[in-house]
Length: 304
Image 1 (tube, rainbow, N blue to C red):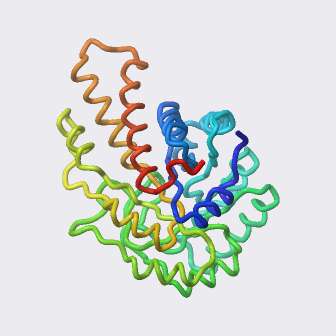
Image 2: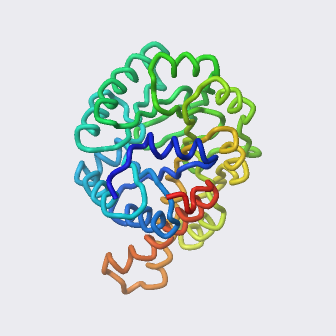
């Protein structure tokens, strides 16, 4: 199948009342896990690379993602996650990404609009989808960091979308990057989400939405990790957010925890192992299971 524009995936999701999973990759094993889960689930996916991933694996890693996307029987968009500059977004568009995010959320409102408009003007000539962000999520993801939440204002969102003509909008409604999203009871601002959805006419995106499953954390800790007090977004709240307009949900942390837990377990149980293929195979299978579970939660199974 040809590489699919993110716009196509999001329009179908918006119309169908489900969300497309957007999964971050940093190496071959993660890419294989995401693609295998998408094929087995007959689901569309965004295969995402952050600026940190591109620094780590280079555009060779992006080329691998694009090659996988072109040969599988399900629709895949290769997406730049949290692109922090116009130059990086333009480079990804030129390289062959079918979707990019320009993250100007840390900039003043007017500057966020300006840089987003620049990316949109370049991307639309190549049929590449553009995602932007308004508001900020607390926490760290690669090179993106915010010390506190800055929730998305519905009126500002309407103005932003109208002026930039952006294809989708990432919103801040209480999720956080990383494994430590909540100190108290996990709760999203679904009322705010409903107001944003009523104010704009584009698909909405939820970042920082990993559920940080206790079983994954427990397994990692059993075999030597020290991940304490980690708490993610409950799956039921994600389902409610989808009903209110979320069409794309990002996932990274759970993949990382699954990878770490599986590698730790395998090495503990097989101390004589040294073949990286043997060591990484259980990790690939663990991440595949995470992706398949998320696809079911999002309602995108059998939507390819």
